[in-house]
Image (cartoon, rainbow, N blue to C red; front, side):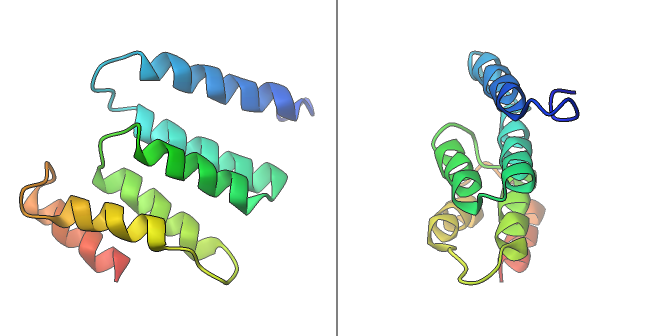
Length: 116
């Protein structure tokens, strides 16, 4: 709503508040996608790819890796103009597709295929 009213700073603040609340919950299923949506919103309204990327990089330390979250990061990197910066993403994908990770075998295979 704030975005439609032209209050970008208020919109960013709402995302940050919602993320802060969700961080307080243990094992949040919503937090990874909130970060992904916040990053996408940030990029679309401000055009600042670096800020959007910083949001995602910061999220990697805060959330449990999951297929939907990694898909969102991979998609984000594919829509950006060159040069691509996938170094931060590669280590997270490697961690997720490792045999001892929490992801299912099908999810690990899907993320691996998408990343290639």
